[in-house]
Image (tube, one colour):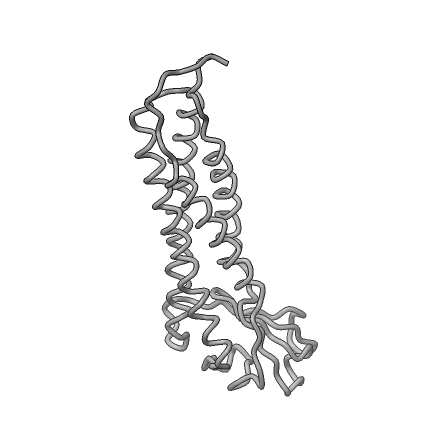
Length: 207
């Protein structure tokens, strides 16, 4: 079978990293513990710590009907700060962009390995790289924005039905930030690998 003189091994690695990065991006949006709220009053929040994600706020309690008490956070809620609104919008947007980038990257990798449509491979990699960098940006912006709020111990004015105190005595970064940064790093690396591809105009060789 005829192959190009140099196959896109780095771009294949980029595709693997992109798939892993997209999975972590979806996980970033889904985890509840973006912010860890430590509270003094243990009468309702029995464990002394609550966790706030971009879609739900939860804590453990021995006095409520359920041991793990959670309330949904909607983009239409008036009490949520702009960084959580941005996180909901951008993290949701990142997933279809990342899927599109992975599909285009898979198309390009397949065609460079099987020497099909060589003239279009370079542009497919460029588009895939751009989409993955855009996906990483959509993840990093809310991650750093919310991280800044946690480090400055900014509170959220939850309504009474959430059973949250007016403010925690301290906040810490949760797993959502770690997963978000890791996913973005993987997507940035994969995007740069796709953009670094150079199509070969030389002769083919048989392996």
